[in-house]
Image 1 (tube, rainbow, N blue to C red):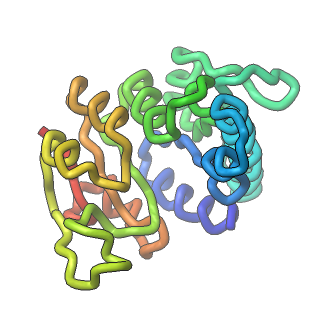
Image 2 (spheres, rainbow, N blue to C red):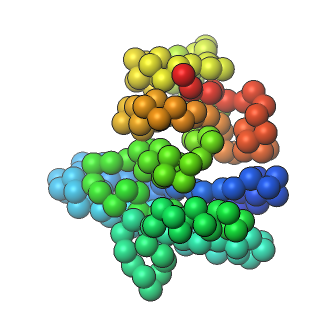
Length: 209
């Protein structure tokens, strides 16, 4: 799976686009699963942050084997494994054409990977935040449960907040709204979706002012 994702990242990088990636870790650990068994929230979240670092290392390895130079940075310091996240260093790596993979979320419990992605995107002066997920945009209802649900081609930040869209949490959307950072929600597994997104094609759902 890491190699499949790496191939999609490689296709975007070949368009001469600077790429920084913030990963989740639902495939390894979900904090809410631990909480369902009585685990304390902060402990469950810290485990989730560590799990994202496992995914970051796996993706970096897959990209390096494809000839793409990467740097893994983490919000939780573990210098024997990865660089600590330093904003200016991340920007410098991007300027040199390296793919920066950021693990460990924000380093704080109670903040989602979405919020970490929004925060890091603004810190490195990104032009666009792509939420690459398993649905091809924002719908009026869950399309898996409601086949007649309508998909939005575009919506404002306020609409996304009012509708409480499930693809991204309110903190991340508010952060993007306050800093005028557009969000594009696309299906990662749809062929060429990432390339089309960075080239400005109408795909998925654009969330902006």
